Image (tube, rainbow, N blue to C red):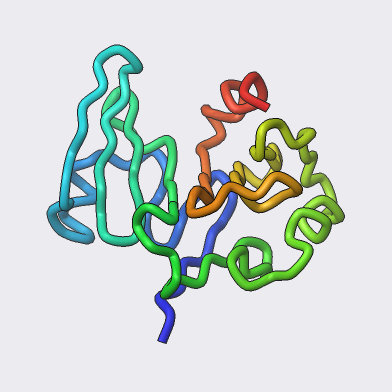
Length: 147
């Protein structure tokens, strides 16, 4: 059976809320496998078996699912769409009211009003390099400069 993560854009991914501290995450889901501190970017990456959590100023701002961590046994649902199982995903997400997709650039596409960045799902396939990134409302402006 696949592990299911229901996403509420800008609010939560599964039972993990944006804005929560690393300590609160550990209380809720346990110790991570690995922690990488990147002082240049001002980010802390916290690795769990299914996802990577990104903290800035001690608050959760990104949740990332990647092929690096193996997404085969996951179901990631946003607005009733299973990100990993839906055919024509980019078209379906683009047709959602107020999704506000960016242009695809080097395999990356943002859906600003869904708090979602996809890599390797569009026209430019990136073998074993797919990434699904949900970002907090505070990261929306930063993501708009990436794609």
